[in-house]
Length: 341
Image 1 (cartoon, rainbow, N blue to C red):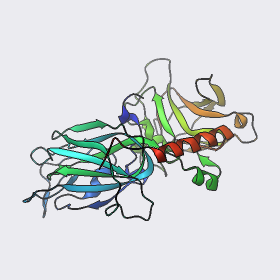
Image 2: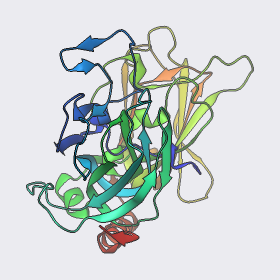
Image 3: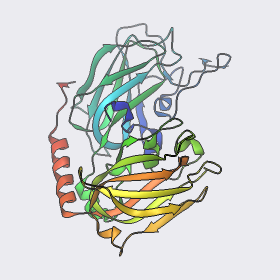
Image 4: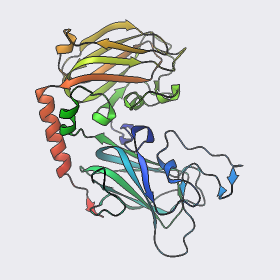
């Protein structure tokens, strides 16, 4: 996908992200920055701290400086773009922001760590707007730091990129869900994203509502909808899970799963199979011909339209897949940002 905003949001709370530090959150809590979904606004809502905003808001500065918040990404990855969303902040948004990245171990305190590199240099932003910034860094980061100049409110911070799978972790886990965002999976294309993003299919954990899946508009022709996924590595698949949880009257009637390597032809892995509403369907490919076919991309065709909650593709990387994971990990570790912070 050409627009970086179609890549997974690595900071999302439902992916495991957390806002681990903020120097000030006098008016609105820092954790709102990574809440799923668009911000909301009630013009009549006030509490003891003042106007209620669905975002992070600091007090008015009376001295030089800036405010900042640090987000631990749900999974380490390479950032391709950042969106600083100032929705509903009109007279209290920060005029300028910057974003930096850092890679540190899980037990390190990023608030005191050194080695931050610039992802987005200090830049002007508009109020009540989705301010999008492409990022040219190829470095693996675990945390991002948002700085606002001098103070104000930000509704959401979206950190779009690609997760990078740790080969050591893969060796310890064995068979894994190679479609999962946390293991490097991502959606590369789809026929329709009218109601919700297909990236939701790859999030960890069970969905909590229909809104946490992928749903298409109603088709009025003889075609069908589809989504294409890139796996975290070339692999052979052992188990496929097609989950229609919470889709009661709008689940697809049937599904077909195909796979391929590179730009090769699609090969059928799962023949057209009826789907039930609100059901987690599990299909064993191990010990079948489909389970011996190496794939690094998968296409799910749903017939004719509807909604899916999750797609799980459990398998083991091939030798070529393991080598590619190692190369990507090494390249990300050696990557650098465009400037030092």
